[in-house]
Amino acid sequence: MKKGVLFALIFLSVFSFSQQKNVKITNLQPQSEDFIFPLISYSQKAVVQQKINTFLQVDELEFVPNSGKNPYQLASTATNSYQNYLYFYSWKRLGTPRNILSLEMEGEASGAYPEGFTNYRNFDLRTGNFINLEDLFQPNSYFKIEKIINDKIKKRVKDYIIELKAAPTRDQDKDDQIAMYQDCFTENTLPYLKFYFGRNQFTIVAGRCSNHALRALDDLGSHEIVFKYKELEKYFSPFAKNLLSDSEKVISPGSIQNKLYKGKIDGKYPIMLLVKQIYDDNSFTCVYWYVKNKKLIEWHGTFKNNHISATEDDYHDENLKEWIPRAKIEAHLKGTKIVGTWQDYKTKKNLNLELEEL
Image (spheres, rainbow, N blue to C red):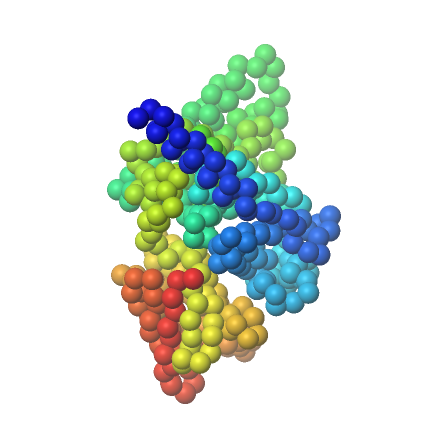
């Protein structure tokens, strides 16, 4: 009996290592010193490979894969949706449980002033789906988890304030530091926290206490709160427990946030759609593109009670100082499908919209 259990554990360990080993990561071309961006290769699971690469390139670069020669065009010319120069200097693959891919990506955004950033992107290697932090916890535990995180941050900040006040000498910089930490924002909520997986622990990352002007005074930087998986087990959702169990059987997280869909408008125009963040007030945005021309088009609206009401804008009227709609979208989530209508704003003609989770 003991030999059988030992063999099973060895088999799972080897299988886990094999799955991770099959995922290769190189640099998206053309790379340069300003653009070192991950490109995933997973030949055993082509759909997973496609989903991860599509998400990363659309979400970070606003580039649909294979839509042009230079995926960095918008980022390098500040012609992206937020009109900032965006650079990616490095990426790192983190050690994780078998079913998970966690990436750390470092770069710089330049608007009014340059600001460095570190992002974490986590994916389910069984499906290729992006992992949302909220999906890892039971909804009735959100407040408790947020309180645990914020209390740990408050203690970290408070302890450092005590250390600063106990210094043998005080100057203006120390007084400014103390004031900055006393005003530190510590009311973080799950949708606005970063996170990444480790082999035996889970790290949640909250933003620093300083704004850009005071960053040089901020010795603490971002707040990394580390948990052993066992510490969070009673708060984990069924999806999280399944994800961390090394099981090949997939339990859906239920959320459509950050998921990719494919389908057709009017039964003959193939499209793909990426749902982005859904906010507490039920507002959301998503982007879609026609498979033929691969140009990103945005929808904005609400997602409530599994129903989507959204608008697709056509152009901005400078005289009216407002966006002129191109279409209205009304659709309903039915399991893994989104079904509804795309209505031409001018003609009021309804076209069927049918999408299915990729």
